[in-house]
Amino acid sequence: MLSRTFWEDAWGKNAPGGVLGGCLGMPLGHRNLVENASREGCLEGGGCWGWDVHRGRLGVGSGRAAGELGQPNSPSEPTLPQLGPHLPPRLQQQPWSLLYCTARDGFSLRTLYRRAGPLSSPALLLIRDTDAQAFGAFFATAIHMSNKFYGTGETFLFSFSPELKVFRWTGRNNFFVKGDVDLLMVGGGSGRFGLWLDGDLHHGGSHPCETFNNESLSPRGDFCVQDLEVWGLA
Image (cartoon, rainbow, N blue to C red; front, side):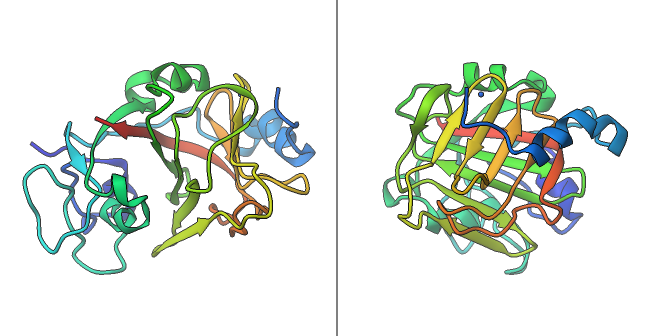
């Protein structure tokens, strides 16, 4: 049986069903967001429902098949299969499984690292904020703690606004991913992160950065997390 997902909840009844932390330092505006979030109405949680499958695929197809993600009813509907063509070719038809979900595992960056799987496994980070905006990042290796940047040029950011936009490596720097127990960041340059999350996974931000030449993934820049999932190879 297919379960309700945060993508369906964010985008309404027409969304397709799923078969499927020492850093460089957080900019002052980001620190202020974390410190003042309770005064600005950020939610302390929320629930993701997870993709109720163990072998969901991110491949591309013209129809719905067993073991695959459902296809969109219209090109404008955000759906995970739209990410398939943007993954490295070796991964486009690989089975994926849910590694971490805030509803099941709690809001904790430390727990995310612990459940993120072997270092050799790629990862897909999916976020829905409290404004029902959906966005995330693809990592060529598992998300883990590191005192230096790691990752490859296959790393990218994406958003559904509402159509899928993918922001790839520009080659201007190698600030792909870095994190400790207090902060995870993706992309950087000139003191701005393409995407960052705090240690409680309640608050984050997204700003244009040199690594990906991206737009802000969340319209307001800084955001509060409603749901978050990490997927890896099954």
